[in-house]
Image (cartoon, rainbow, N blue to C red):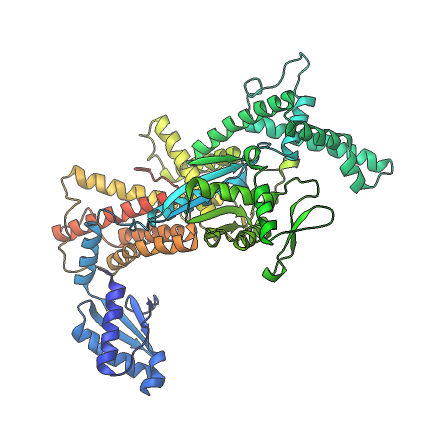
Length: 599
């Protein structure tokens, strides 16, 4: 039963009967906490047509509902606000409807497919905090869209070629041999492969900057020095050799990339992220040239005297954009045109979503505009899920300077913080946990804290991550919600041990206000999923999970559960608790967060 839809229909009928010839769009909002009721109808929109005071209209509609609506128990009018209380029988009917709905929280199939591309790492460094926000957003949006009934394909494109990759390769060739002539490896260094290669990326930057500073000191302008420094010249030469297929260069590239991929795999597994298909820029960077030729023939692109190819997007509020250099080489937009076509050929998705930082807003506006002008059938289904940067309390991070906080290190730091917080709060309750159980719990709490903290914020907002705040067991955090779930599971275990029933229909005829609030929140879950899917907003689900957990704690503090002597009330509270626990688990699952059975 949909209470809101039923109420809207009843109010519409009330208006039609009380004021023939008048109608309107009946909108309901949650009743403010300081007033009694759950739903509020604002009558001001009717005053002009009816020529009556808002309160008078509210009173008349309220009286009609009191006499004719099966879902209304009582009402009150505050000026033009008609506050409606729902009957206990209705709440029980709604609760039982959710209890008996095996697919509660999963919406019907849409018959459409969506591709979500996220992560997009470079093979010259480990995943870092910014990548974590990207991965968590992409993974959560994929889960939410699947819950909305879409067929979801998760893809990743790896930036495995280019100048930045050659910087690590050159540094490894220069500095990777020790005094005994042995090449450093992940095994010999004790480092994950991605961490090892990231170390050489930093080493290149230090050596390169030293060269530039020396050239500037000798009178070379800085801009010239940055372009002509010997190390930069060597990097450009290495890239040319790679593009020419030089065996030694390609072998080095493959070796270092394989180390990085092994490191990435460990991180992806630890954060619970996977992909259905991975694309590699080394396989796609030549794509798009045929599209440029197609665009020239269609008059979408034009060629300048130097041979370069451009598109004029000034009518779209953008500018003129280069799509092919004079020497015939591609630019990033050319590659993305080809890759987007390739992904559509591979999967035929109705929508393609890119999870990429907001520094690329302009790039995606250009990409989508070009594909529309080219007449691509899929062009109107493209979306850039733009998100803001993540800072630490210490400030911005820079990969090339080695000031980035690696994802693995941050996960460990948050896990350690969660361990300390849980130990302090438990006060001996973890004594019966084995070492392995404690380790698993702390990892679950640490990762839950990290994911929740990064996902509860609107993606478009720039944010600061504080590991200590993220593990607070009393605030709007992942561990708080995880703790509430563990509390519910503890209650249900104790009930089962004493033979109490957790299933079956609720038969009580009266529910406390806080029980009604829980049922109301539970009934909103499908709509929250729909809203989160429509807006690509995991933050909606995070906020919902927190509201539900917080309201359950209020219920737990106010009413007795296991000590309730009325068997009917006891059963209803156990059934309600079980449904809350299951819904918290499902909601947190949409964020990619596991919840513990005990804490």
